[in-house]
Amino acid sequence: MSLSDQTREKLKTVSVATICTALFKRGLRNQFIQDVHPVSTAGTMVGPAFTLRYIPARENLNPIEVFQDPKHPQRDAIERCPPGAVMVIDSRKDPRAASAGSILVTRLMVRGCAGIVTDGGFRDAPEMAGMDFPVYHNRPSSPTNLTVHQAVEIDGPIGCGDAPVWPGDVVVGDAEGVVVIPAHLASEIAGEAVEMTAFEDFVTEEVQKGRSIIGLYPPTHEQTKTDFAAWRERTGR
Image 1 (cartoon, helix red, strand yellow):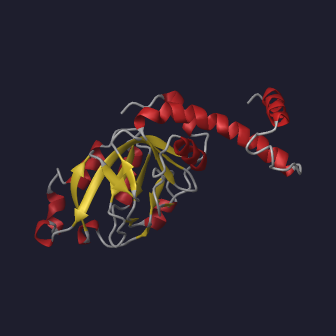
Image 2 (cartoon, rainbow, N blue to C red):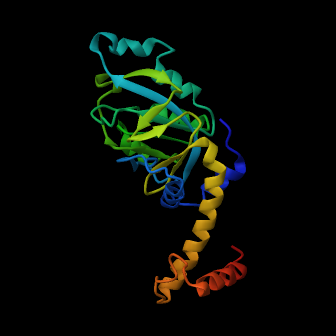
Image 3 (cartoon, rainbow, N blue to C red):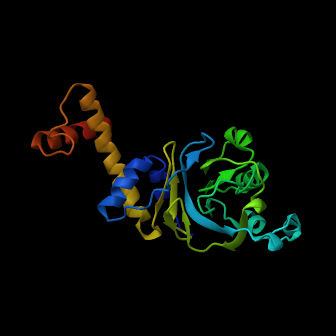
């Protein structure tokens, strides 16, 4: 899981929306994880993906006793998720039972992981809301995961909220949602997104002053480019 500190810090300064546009320019239209929402307000989440996959539970293979196995995939994944990584759980967009609860998420937090995302639900959501740790899910869900989900695979390709996720892809989450950047594009996207953000900040200032968006956004008028260059020099951006 290779994500440079420089790329990580750049991605912390840009929005998921901006990243989505940069990905769209490269023909990648399906990288935003659909129907997940922040549980906590712990700031921007950035890290390489470490994945867990659930299938529909089969009752004779999924009794409560399976948690006694120290290699149970859900428990094992919590202990194996590398520091700095984001755990991403494929729960088949099914929030009828919890993908995990506050104890397991706390364990990820104290181990130095970067966050957790499921396209299902989490139990103990009120407790998670107060944690200084990024958490995303579809909705709160109290039943134990064994009710509906059976954990079967760690660190393989998954789908989460209709987005494809490969281990090591870079996951970014903000107050709006979560996007997945293919690993080989992470540095390139980070650099472009920083530039896009600077321009959009300039545009916002101009629009607040009353300027028309025609010729400004996108910058089809030469004057816009001149004004942006002067803004960058003045602001150090």
